[in-house]
Length: 103
Ligand code: H2B
Image (cartoon, rainbow, N blue to C red; front, side, top):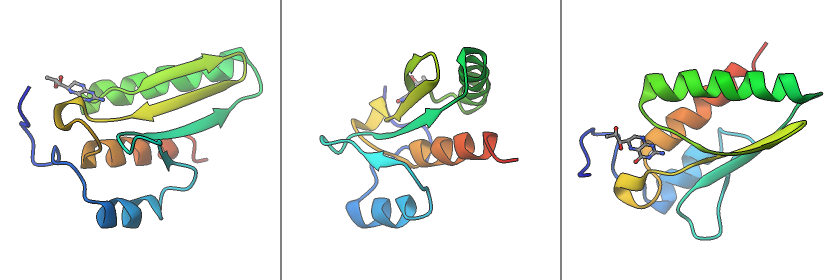
């Protein structure tokens, strides 16, 4: 689809670097098209609880991560298909994931 929100523009390298500096643990993938972070949990139900919380937020944002998970871990990957790379939507969602885990 065509970009429909102002947040959906590819981020330039300088802006991306600046934004990632305040998002600890989030790394750009080798192809430069996504950001990823690994999360650890004590057991399976904590991992699934996290995934469900992420799913609720993703639905609110209408922006959805790729997920890889196992018993006590989950890797999230954010990318914006509509721009073929990273947009502000990915940064916003990464920040919102980190807020889910604040306590
Ligand atoms: N999620 C992600 N990660 N990237 C997108 O480009 C995207 C999405 N596009 N979720 C959204 C849905 C779009 O297809 C709909 C029309 O909002």
